Length: 196
Image (cartoon, rainbow, N blue to C red):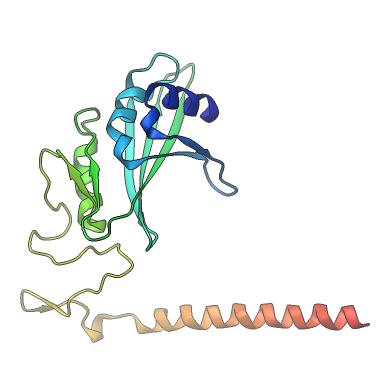
């Protein structure tokens, strides 16, 4: 289905430069040019061959070199249900921008706001472009890898030491160290067996 959809997108929205991304783990997807998301959304909602009439989720991931915005679409047709993930890369970290698809899928409204609030991706032409989870005067974007939370917000300490679960944090560090030691021991055992 994805190969057919890539062909349809590229023939109807050539600037999308759609590519089928075959995932070794997880769900395969289609990657497009960020500038084409609105036209692609219009196309996949209205085309007769493989339409997707529901936007389920918009999420984002900070890969440091770029921010990836993921759109999960579906069609709940009883006879031919299907789903689709479209991914796009936004390279400008200072003010990453993507066209809003709220004019095509109204459900994009809060989801785009959340993606802005957590990752700083601005959705051009969004009807209500403001934070949805953090206070309006919050500084930074919590899901970015370079995010450093403030020590205080409105006079309140953000991470008071007495409320931090230090034991759990230390356990994760100890667990990673144990895994490294197990791998090293297995490697040494394999080397020993190879010598014999």
